[in-house]
Image (cartoon, rainbow, N blue to C red; front, side, top):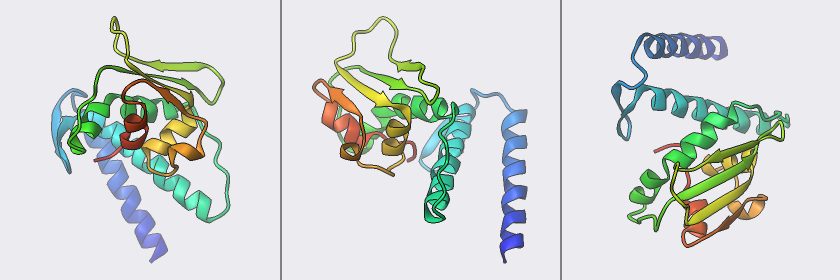
Length: 161
């Protein structure tokens, strides 16, 4: 069954890549939790692949080095905070800024331009992505958060529906 599963996965992955590459990135598409832009769908699939690759690597005792592709996952998690709060029947008090140390030690800053954030999250990008992917608890990371929604942001951030 292993080779058959691998072939099925490769065929499905190729079909999805082809469909996403052929379309307008801003086109709305139907997905599990509703409609989203095709570009966002592609990012959620990237996130899911990264999460489950990490699951398999961990089970096999392998250590995967984080890459700069985490930027896409971190940005998705930040951008979908309002969605995560809505799913929990909660509201954000105000804007959230996220400042992360990338795997190459540069900084990634996610915030709404021209708006002062009320809540700030900071720390390693890998930690933020692991928390958003529900693979680590915030207390198991070096993430810090301040502001009125600090605890809720770390509790509710996610990369999937």
